[in-house]
Length: 307
Image 1 (cartoon, rainbow, N blue to C red):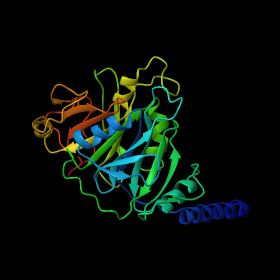
Image 2 (cartoon, rainbow, N blue to C red):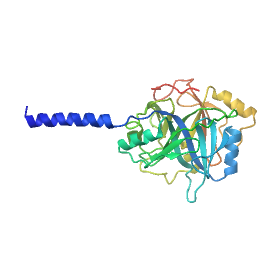
Image 3 (cartoon, rainbow, N blue to C red):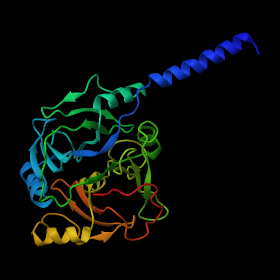
């Protein structure tokens, strides 16, 4: 072997090994943290999340103009005043919990993803930062604080997934799959011929992100899309042992006001679900943790979430 070639090969091996050793490990992604939405009517939205969903109202430690509606410690909906010129958009960002926000920031930076220079700090000891995914959706990573939360009236206490408008599954996968290590959970559509929903489960828990593939080619919100349709796509799901039983609780408590489905139904994934909508159209989906029917389109390829 040519001595120069041999020396170069050895140097390349050591360089790659050193780079692998110097790259920080990815901190754990431990579950959904929150979905942040805009409202045009704070009082009506307060009624929806407190009296219908049953969440407990808390101060917003990230934005003094916002409010949090928590269903459990570390999981909540953040409601923000609607900025001028927002059009039909009511989705600001969503967030994952992690056990090390600064470590996650350094990990993403080492993967050449654009990150802020530092994490933000909350008065409860929480830490967080935000990045943009490949389609420009804002994603936060939150290291939760120590504030205890009790929400006994919440219709469920586990946000199991968040979904939002997506144009390109392949583009989003470069972030969620290739960099963060998300894994396939389920995919399906309204018909067998069209793919509408792709669920990618986080690597260290059973919560998932759902690509709502209704944007068509291009980017941004399609010009012909209505606010109601966009609100169906931009949503959060609360897990239930039994959606029909949760529906009975809502019905018995006279909590079924505003816009909602007529009754629970079994979705294409074989799970019972029931949809409610906040005053600006953002969907809250109650979903069974486990399927009762065989799912269409694809089998589940990762474990179901639990309570």
